Length: 585
Picture 1 (cartoon, rainbow, N blue to C red):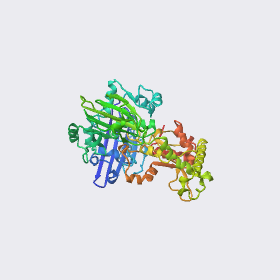
Picture 2: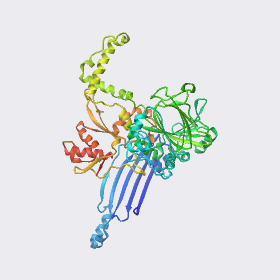
Picture 3: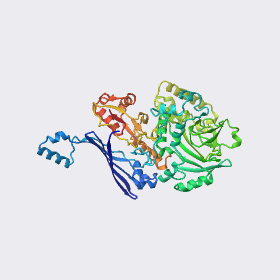
Picture 4: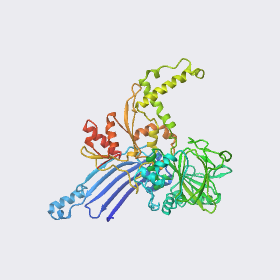
């Protein structure tokens, strides 16, 4: 490890009810080098745009920093004068150099970039300009992970080891439960580091609220009884209630606070191509938090602390699309009964009826439920793509544009003409699909890319452009390919006269970790078009091949991008570089 120093100077401004701003200057130098790196950044947000952030964060510059959009970022490399060459200078030359440095002109000053960021309306809107949250200074040092984070595939393979992914998807996925019991002390210690009861004290100090962040509940006579208090969670009161009322603490989406869960779930979202959420359940001995029920998600349960006794039952609604409680007299006898211990993993498909309790002799049980594939079925995909597919087909097929038979809508149940016609149209659409007609997703793809976790950078790193400004002779590579989506969509500024199509590049680099899987408010729904427009870079359709080139090739020279004009090549590279989507090699 080289001898070095790092200096952070921070200006913090809070005007109550108006805005919060930070100006940071960072200096870094390693012994043996002849330069120092300096970074200056400005972050700022109106108080009105921080409504979903705990007010306790407003007075702590270290906490609020991660929720303030970047307004300006400057990076410099400051080279020191060579001592030998300086000793050989004449007195006038030395005086001239000192004068230049006094005036602020540094020797070999290398300007790497000024990057204005697009301002978002609110910090809750998937973080227009949010930097990924830094690891909290009170979080314990990370235990070495037995999981393989080299790629999404390797992460999943190590998560379900020793079962091979091929066997898992062939024999278990959406079909039946899988129990993996392990006697591995290092894995158990790692699981415990993901979340434990002791973490609640620090998390409550950061400002968590009943309902939004945590539920306190217990199963009583086959029903879920919620024992939440109002407002902010007080740790001492929570601990007292936990001991006395014997209820379960359900902590919502802990990946917002725990870096290692963020790391795992971000990789799993890349693996599944679907949102991945999580909940932590902490249950005292001889207690049960939830009655028998089934979920609308694929479930992976990691046992973190203590032991939990599980009972699984045959689904009444296989691959269910919604959550539902099931009464004891309807579910019959369990198909599986077992006890999970630290380091164990349990998978079961959506629709699997289940219930769990903490046995006696165990102080408490803690497990995390990692879930995915909510509303991610073939049916959901058809609902998403068929309207656009029919609309596009109507432009080419006059038969589909023909009017309905007279009075059909008044007499639809008394005629077999309509079903026959519709069957013919559907067969024709199927033929077009098989012949290669392109499908356009209306919502599912954008919903995924705009609501998923941002890339996990680790070590409190912030997202910055990769390398110098790209020029024609530079070699570039697309960063975070799993977080980039290219769509052809109608131009936002289209008129009633014509529909102009354009190419849009969406990405999740600026998504808000703090709001991941927390739902959208009414205001956010109303402003959906503006939010998506702000996060989607728009290009002419002529840029399609150049963007596909970046997605499929590891590196490419800017001058070799598949565009006719050099100016278009440079402008495309610069637009992607500004969004931190490409790096200059």
